[in-house]
Image 1 (spheres, rainbow, N blue to C red):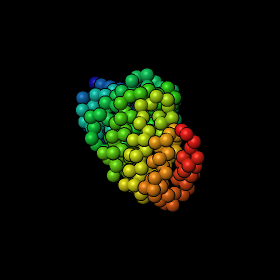
Image 2: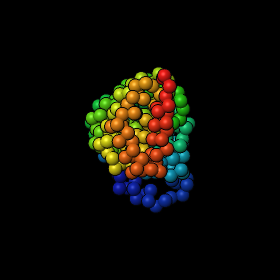
Image 3: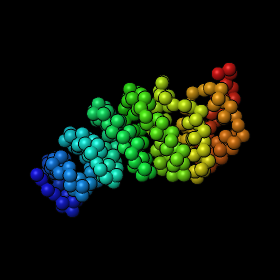
Image 4: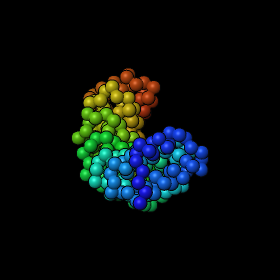
Length: 270
């Protein structure tokens, strides 16, 4: 069993060793997580390092080759502490970013069901936001992955999250971003009218948050046309929310809002 203190690991990595040494150190750390999975402080420290290392293209490539993805997934599945799970989620989100091959591999390893389990059990807004961020990242890999997520309980969880945590803008924005990846997928279990109502409510509660307003407008613009949505979008209360967003963030919201009004104003017998 390999035992390395978090302080030692940080000092070694800050030395910026040569490529071969760097790879050997990362390999040692991956093995350390595998061998010390019950040591919370050690695994937590290493996952935090992996999250930082995987922000660079070199670190991302090395960690991927060394099998850090499945290792982090195991940490997520087995973590009994919310902070540890969240740190592993952050590391895996960074690691899979712009790495389609690893995303697909993690989906095959049933990571979506793991994320859904964490969403069901967690009440920490930061953990929930990171889960939706990771799901968005994974769904961008392929339409089949987005379909898999769209078919799961995560849709209902996302809808509930928007309502329950409507005054926490970071979480709302992360949820909006995820929903944008599945909203156009067929048979995605979304109730579009209910979703639109929740999105508008969250936008009303967070008028000055750029992410909530921008992602909210674009999510609404991507909803399929229907009579029910036309009626909602033509209501005075909806118009006030959307016009306010267009005025506050014109560069990010105006085109999407113009599209919403145009499509629904000229919707014929949908």
